[in-house]
Image (cartoon, rainbow, N blue to C red; front, side, top):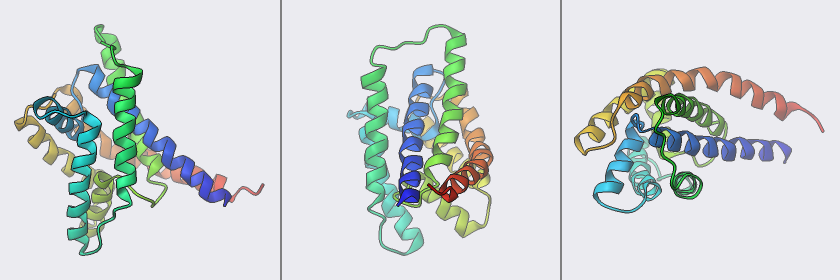
Length: 206
């Protein structure tokens, strides 16, 4: 029971960090991550909030992932995309509704901090096999099917979505390029120590 609560905390805190990092990148106005640039472009051109598009695209990815695995769609993943979408809207519309970063130093700080927080957030919530984000579930599936590392798999996915986001008018910038090639290695860097920390505290007797 204790271990379940610990892993649940990794899951929830990871999603909170992930949404915060995404929001910081968007607000830095130096380029959002490929997926987030796509969500922003869809929000601005079609309507609905960024979080709503996280949900809509997530449902499509759940179906794609099930086809790749030739199994039943992981509808539990809807819980994760609902949480991520709601948390992104919480940060953007609730916490920072009128925030505008004008100083270049602040914008660079928000960009770098956002990328690091995203990498850490993904590594935290991946400690739970429950209801993974369809984007990261697809990453894990492709890694399993190809035998490539998490870093390579994530980078290939990010580059593919980057091209799509560019053509539909997403907020592409230097931040987009950095996160495209950095997020995979960051997950690879954070994941082992986070896993080690989780395993250590899960073995602690109370």
